[in-house]
Length: 358
Image (cartoon, rainbow, N blue to C red; front, side, top):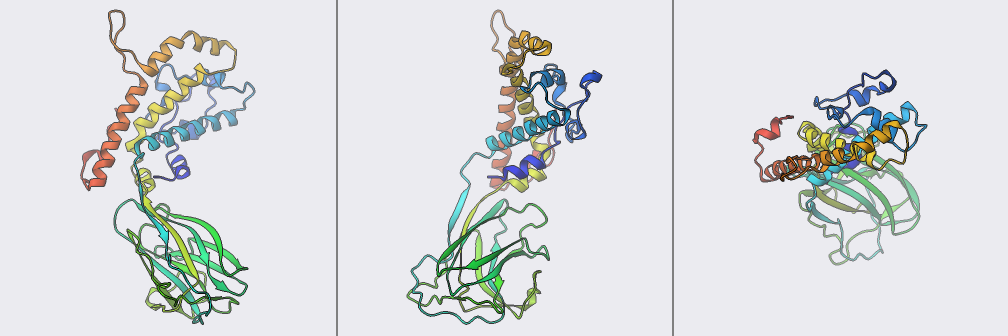
């Protein structure tokens, strides 16, 4: 699994186009002429900006819109390649912190301060988790702010104002913690400031209501920071255990997530993305609804373009040609082998560290 939007934005510019010498088509912006890998789509003799501009469907497209189209095509190519590489089952665990029945009769009296959970993540690489929702078990009505911290950052990673209106309600969160951005691993703290709030959590004292679930790759415990009243991460030395219930029942999913791995090893994916992007450019000519000189020229080259994409097998009349699609499949196969080595712990593989772009 990976976060598609982060991959689309994070890999943009891994490949690019050379600015055409034809002044009428020298219209590419900096984003599209940037190639961090040194790979350029229009080094393929069939992938011409002239053809792309004149075969895309909207004849009155502006330069800005055309550049945006090319960037969208590159983003789609990156997502497509990563989807083909990371296509195996990646779910690890999912559940609620509390699963057993609870008798909602008595309520807790909470100490003043931050109350909630510490979430400790295992050191297994590429493990991520999502706090999908929170089930709120409170008596009364009132409002508080749910806060999520990581020990790598002073400010809150997430916050949400929650208004309690019933004794059992659900708030969708979808807070994804995938080790990208400014934090990596560390510990997470989720909870709220109990001081002065008008609601009280129900006690979990009936039968096994207070038994917490065990999660693979995560360890949870209830915590208290006495007299905390801020909106930044507290002094970790002030954390105590908490015996009372918080009223927060989190729904958590844990899974393998390769977003961080992809973003930090982007050169590994450059050749495959370049091939996929080139195929998409050539396919645009074939599916065009336009009619103009360059569109007709691309149609005249239809057979050669299809051979460039799909290749040919050798025969008495044809020379064997390895098409772009077969090359892309080969790159994807190599990438999957590298990922398999990563999962098995073979992190010293030479190709994880350096990757030939030839």
